Image (cartoon, rainbow, N blue to C red; front, side):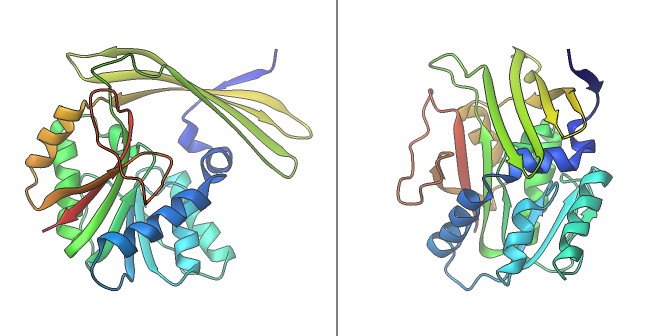
Length: 260
């Protein structure tokens, strides 16, 4: 049996970045398409709350955008800024709470594409986050927000697996639902990374708690921040020409929230 390490996956940004950064191109292209389709002005300044390792931020910076981000995990922020410096770019990330921040300059768009929003464990934190985003956007700016909804007309997906390789490093990941407390609106999730290097093999194991949202619960949340309106909805195939209609069977959703 491989060695097992209990820990916070976000404290291991090298492995986290390999798994979640391997498919950056689809999200990157989708973001550019969203800017072109849903913003009636030139787009220059971007912000990513809970930016993690900066897998998308650095690509956008290299394309000429002025980017910034925040994240609560200092290891992720350090990894992100080191990546920027390796590419000859100024550091873009700061340690900060995605539910309580203020930007020095407003941005044309913000994005959070891989469910980090559900780490906000209360309605107050979620509202605070959306209010911060709304305050940070210019009029007509958009927030591209991706998350998993809990379906009401069918059983939810219970597990997911990914694999990625870079050079001599390979990481296989597996995430599964341990159960949903509907009253508390908490989904308990298990996740592990199986890490393979030329000299070591080990399993990194973590437990996470995500706040749950049905379609109606998310719509009710958005109504509490009237500056943001749902402009369009997509799924995680990131096809800009194929928006979706969210119903009781929908799980993966990218909401385009526009500031009025």
